[in-house]
Length: 457
Image (cartoon, rainbow, N blue to C red):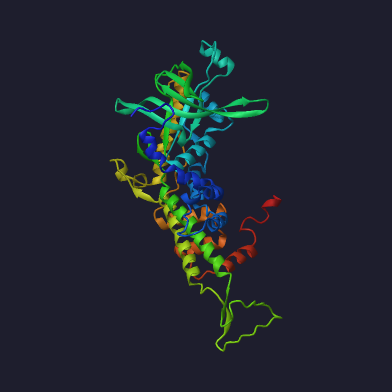
């Protein structure tokens, strides 16, 4: 089927069906409320004012966003390291790799966050368009040099590729982008554009009232498209899915269950006055200084309250969901056997890696490709290699979930008391420890051993 320049290809449409749930969760409570019935179902026969009240009081437990932050932060807990084969010139450029003040460590951490959340992201290694520049000496004189552009999940519209020497090579790539244009004396308008890249050339299409029109084009000195894909869970060339997608669905389920729990708590907190044997038109004043008179012998008046059974069941359901979310997020850290080469067969540490470690290894390869494109822009032989911290795998799901609980407490998602109780449930702490007593004793204990007097040295 023929596509317009701004339309998504079939491969992108297939990936994009998973993006809205992640976008809503990352947008927080406000975004989830705006999603309305897409995320919080309207009960049968529920009137609109009641639903809107329930929606306006719903709050999000940000398990997906916090878990994503923990997972994407682990490889960057230590500084990204450059191998000796990275040219000094490229190493210097990496201190401001995007010409917006971010170094490669910060740039790559944001890129991994995008890839883990949506399954796909990318980098376009670009070079400034220069007028009247003919030699590399001229480029160096004016400070022109290659730089990286972060491409978000929803910017990739489609591509064409072919296999060359056993690998896939892009022959066309369409990227959505925006630009700002002056609007009147003080305003700024956003202009929607599509950049079409081909080996050795590019086109720029801009949206107007009639659709998208070609506004600019040019040639490049590279025989390839300088774009590198970065994956979450890779499903194919240029395609991927978030490894945290199951956690996203659990988080939405928690959002719905939390709303149900808040509703039943509201109902349970308001007792209902029950009257039996009184005339239907009788006005009753309830209070310490008021009295009522009944004419029927079987008359009765009392408050009817909720038994609380449903409240306890709802609380337990929420706790079970929270535990499921922790376990699901922790699965990325659990070391599992992978495909073992002859060398790895003698090295269990190499063969048994967590999914996150494998994702980070692929991520390193993509960063190396970006450095290589930077080198090719200025006719250097190689761009070199970089390494990320990968020593964060856990042998069991219990160890991984315990590690994630600690990270969630440190990031403020759960309290210290909850963290202690969760560690007790997993057998990491003795069951007879009283969390509140333990926290009080920690406070009374003072500085750690060896820390006293350090401030005076």
